[in-house]
Image 1 (tube, helix red, strand yellow):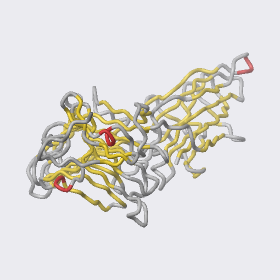
Image 2 (cartoon, one colour):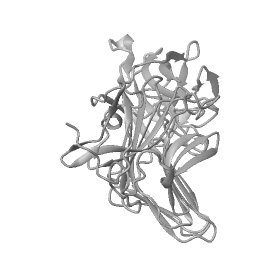
Image 3 (cartoon, rainbow, N blue to C red):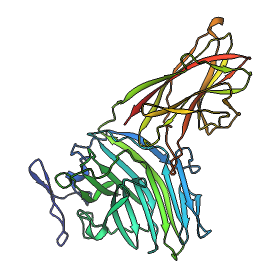
Image 4 (tube, helix red, strand yellow):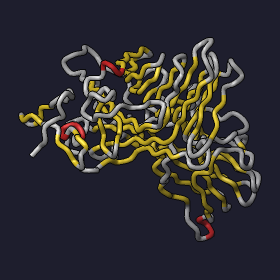
Length: 420
């Protein structure tokens, strides 16, 4: 039998299947069964969360997945890796933003859950944010002017709800948890949301292994439009200090994004081919760009998966193939719009200097079919996908070849799955 709430504590009740759910206790800790055990769409949570992003900063700042922007007006701004985290330090008029290059696809009808750990700033002249957001849209926790808030950003405009107006647990000792949160210490923040344009958002904190909802916003029957324009959001940590403000710090630790209820393999596949224009890779042991892809301008929120690549020599030559992330390419490597992406096809002038890339994502050797070998045809498995920097510079993934002998003519295709 559920125990009664403590006297003098304002416990909310929730309606579930037409029954009022009371606060019950497990090992002396109260929890709200309806809220803790159901996702944003009201489905019972049974640990079927499919992880679509995971970031642990164990050894460095993980620049393949995180971009960083630093405005250093005070000359004191810094961002330093330390103890499995990144410590951002800002002085007066400084700003540091750390944001994932990739954005994470929201699948309609699924509850998306983001969890973020860190330490907020403490000075009244500072603003710290963490959550799923960019400069235009998002959902976040915020410390600003000495007050903790939760926020929704729509088209660059923030709507904030301060801690003393949180409608489930104010985290001041009077709520269902009975906890007074110290936001100057490391906390586990969580946001789950249904979008569909007009769904609900819940802001929560994990305490003693349990998720405690602190504030809930429902948009159905309340708006005439969407509450955020795009639900495919990056993870972002941000610290800024006002003009004349004191030096302050904020710590980024760990974050993850999951799709509750699975994440089906949807989207449209497109195949891009060199067709009648093979790339003349004329010089042995020189690397040549063959096919490249990047996000389409104005569509940075799309998610794209490189599904499959093929390559074949038209001449009697063997070659090495490689899939490169952000290579530096000589000559004119021109991108043009094809569907939701931009695609470039290589030429003899599009050479790549050895190691002039951020990552070799895949690679291998192919023996020419005229000598009894096989052409390349392989699936690509890599969680690193196309993204962009905070300023909008787009990542490029390029299929390249290195001929083992002179005058290779190579054809190639790249198949990509686009998910909007």
